Amino acid sequence: MKGLIGKKLGMTQVFSIDGAVPVTAIEAGPCYVIQKKTAAKDGYSALQLGFGHKKQKNVSKPLQGHFNAANRGFFRVLRELRFDSTDDYEQGKELTVDMFQPGEYVDIVGTSKGRGFTGGVKRYGFRGGEASHGSMFHRAPGSIGASAYPSRVFKGKRLPGHMGNQRVTAQGLLVFGVRPDQNLILVKGAVPGHRNSIVLIKNSVKNKKSKSLE
Image (cartoon, rainbow, N blue to C red; front, side, top):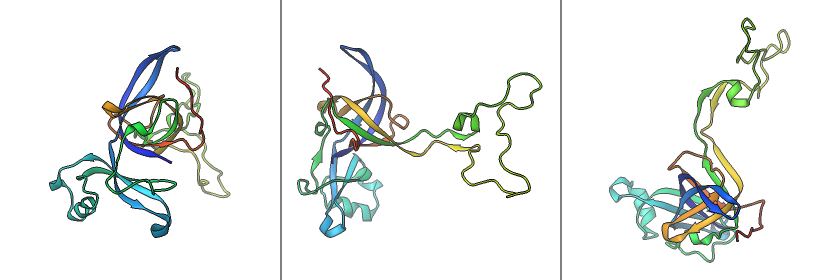
């Protein structure tokens, strides 16, 4: 298991033998090990990583003591990632984007864009009614339940409501390029979230293979 905290910069395209490939550019790391958790002490193995430096005056006193244990400065983002074993990692160790190689598959966790209050047509893809004049039924949800019995709407009924702004995992994305000098990783396809949003990059759970990009 391996992973990094990153910031989504946006989408662009790179050119290969097959033509233009849409990729998402992510500023991944450098991250620093702030805290190490072990199975013997905490019941599971994990690393708490820090990303994005922050001024000391903007950090609370308890967090300052927490950061001082790693002696790597103060960070804006703290995330915990599960690792199979933390024996190879020490507190304060720097993790960079070169832990990933082109051709690998990764899972990326982010927060989807918030769409606010939306109707059933946009939220769930409802067909809606006829667009002709006089139909009186266009984008409304229509009947939502029985009348006399059970005299209520069943739980889970798809209705208008808040859309987006949820934790989403995009699985099995191909790492198309790694640029350690710029702390960049290029991932084929789209990544959840808006520009400059925080994402977690982990090796793929379902796709363990690698693909040759030559």
